[in-house]
Image (tube, rainbow, N blue to C red; front, top):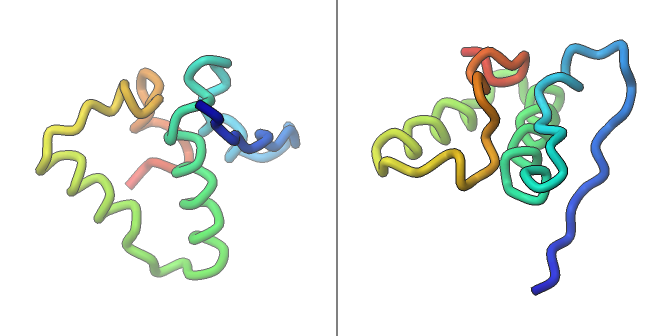
Length: 82
């Protein structure tokens, strides 16, 4: 199966960079894509509710976030804090 992955940003001065999962195997999962999407939404539409709706869906459907590539303590990451 072919999987296209994005290149992670490498600017070191942004707190956003620490929100990504840098584990090579886990970086092929959807967590980093969701993190980038939240970052872009924060810029384009600061009042968005995407993150809250996503977290609600994950909770309501008991989704295994580890299978999605979410790292340990992901809730403490800059872009994921509520």
